[in-house]
Length: 406
Image (cartoon, rainbow, N blue to C red; front, side):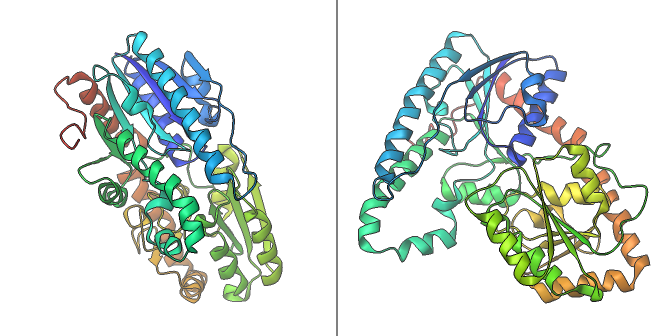
């Protein structure tokens, strides 16, 4: 089949999955062409070299200005993006593609391209999650406390965006997602949408254990420098000096938002913890950092999936993870680490148990690796996803998911 691939994602788990899909479709002999706006990441995982044909659509970035005018300027910016998405749709429709596989959009979450494509072109959307600031309880509660003037000024743009996002996702033939947790969140955000779970996998030959077991005193936490990743929890754990040791916290990140880095450094100084931030490292260095760490401390807020948990376990590094979100599906307590509430003292106790019982710790290391080998190898996971995508594109009887809801 001749397939178009679209995304407007930054680096991270969503793009990691899209790269796996591209590899699988390419290996199956399908002809692929990448259509992306210039704001999308295309060098991550070598995506730009995976596809022979690629068209990059120039798109300016929106820069916040006067806080009073930001809602208006951002809406105008998004309106200009709608016009470009229509252009991309027209271009795709004239090139005779059999289908379009779409990742999410960093502006809209659900790309407007979906509703602009002709019904003659089948579409599959991989939706990691609905826009968190519009649907998560913590943000909704915060919005309720806004002063009335702020509500009058900002809510119209938010409601306009939500309406557009709903229209967009209704244009998909099939919606895939990364976890049962995300499946529930998407179904709640968009009544009538029933996503199919298609989880990401790990390249276990790349993410493999080191030859020498790690020494105590080193923790790792991985993810964007964003408050939702909650890297500060690892600093709090290290600040308690588990086992009477001085612990180093390694934060590995692909991108940064706001003043998160400065806030983490300030917190580390306050706690007397040695913090090392590694930015946009190669996969080889990431694997080395996992392998050198005694444990991965992973406490993101309502993480939709959490590939970090699986990567760490694949490297034989046990995970102390939060008992919520997609982490519940990737981390089995007592097998590759432990899940728990956000309780610093409990996390410290687990580390101290591992220090006092090296045999139990080594059992967890091997259990973590085996858990990934048996359940999360990329070959099996992506093969299932490819079959679902091919089935969707080969079946002309599949209606738009929202066709009967309009």
